[in-house]
Image 1 (spheres, rainbow, N blue to C red):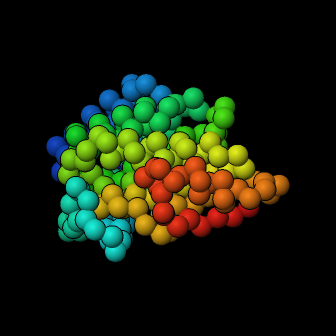
Image 2: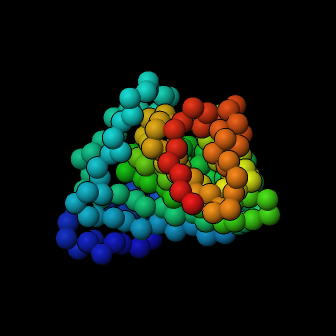
Image 3: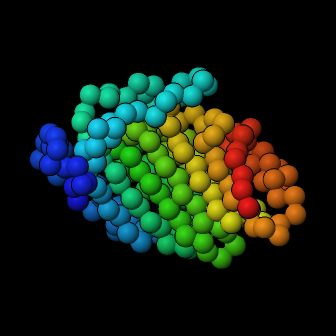
Length: 203
């Protein structure tokens, strides 16, 4: 585990907590579909600020993460280009079971591969309580569906601590020469966890 640039400016986390997160990150590296997994400790002044709550109803996860900690754990997992949505979901679900720490953030990336664009999913303060496997799987599957839409070149999703996706949580980039990609994306996402979520798009 690495410390951020501001690590010497403030308190440091308990060694036992760091060791526990290290064990989880190490175990993730051996999971199917995972290329790399790393963790940094961020002790900057805004590291512990929770993601603002969306206006939708609360989910199964806690709706008010503790913001008292002066640091956060920034975990980065890069999957292989051939990784499946189920394998990505397995990584996230294992974290919801093993960590249950509101100061853990996860960036899960899948590079461009055969039949799909690249994706990045940011889970912000989303691991403070157990989350149903079906919820985790639904998000991963929705992202996979979005990346497979013709004309889509990248997908970025932000999952807040409530696990309720709302406007602004989905950003999609389209190929410059794509024709009506927004309509195709809307149709593809109709029966997924991203159904009805307004997205920002660019070419």
